Picture (tube, one colour):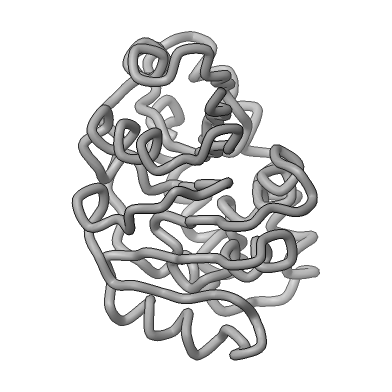
Length: 218
């Protein structure tokens, strides 16, 4: 939200410290709509506390969650029922990713921590023919469209926080506790580099300071 005045940013920080909600989880249902209702295998890169991996388990016969943080991966194991077909591995992406192939690969708010093109190549190479890659990412704001979406997101962000917390203070969601760093690529740069690796990839700017990428392996 770099396009907003510092005073506004400080006020928003105070507001969301008391009423946090998970911007990434907001996209989970949208992610599930991007691939068939039943698939054999799914890989969630940067799985965090496993929220999305557990949702994927309702659609996939087996799910593999990978995260570089041992503590949050251990928390994911604690929160996941042994009845679900989900396994978790502590590994760095992209080098430490399991071989696959996978029918679905997801990556939410993690790609900006990784070497961009190399990560996309690793996802592509692990995707089964006919499989779907779904990314929710973070870009650096630069263009007028970026700033317009940022400003539009502010009142909607407050509404979502109030709805999620019903006006009551709430603990910070577990999936939001991992380390974060600012994105260094702009959306146009992301589009250009993504389509060089994934021809035909569909990318869109989104509200709540995110973009989405969907690519199907033909």
